[in-house]
Image (cartoon, rainbow, N blue to C red; front, side):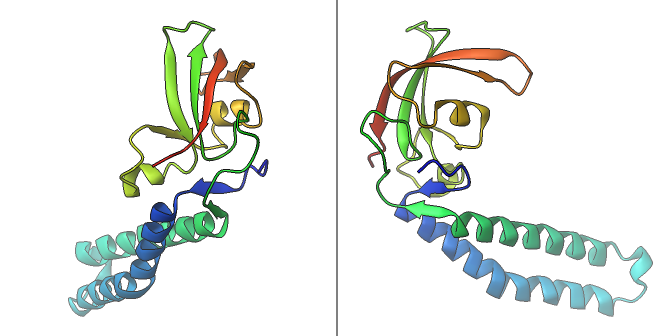
Length: 167
């Protein structure tokens, strides 16, 4: 699974995100439409704070709908693919910064959305598109990789351990 657009997630996370999308496209849109209608009925729209707030809420909701549709379209649900020691989406990875075994992080390579919806995910989650995720994707335990942090600094990490995510 080397496609960096693919988003790995558990079945629980997929189901909860699909439920959120269904709600937003159905009842959520109806509620926003009612708020906008009620605010319009108050009159002058140029100075109507309620109307502008409802329209802003509508815009945020439509953005979330597009994000969810994109994620679910590119979702891969189920067991991670690849060799047991290869970092793939769905792997739990332990890395040591600058090769220091006392300075380690453990993270899941998958959808960051899982943190909020799947209670079995109790660790950091990095997407394969993140700088660290992209650097370790496809690599194996024992490999040392470098990536550019968001602050522009070059960071070196050694992959200490790779495991399939288990609930």
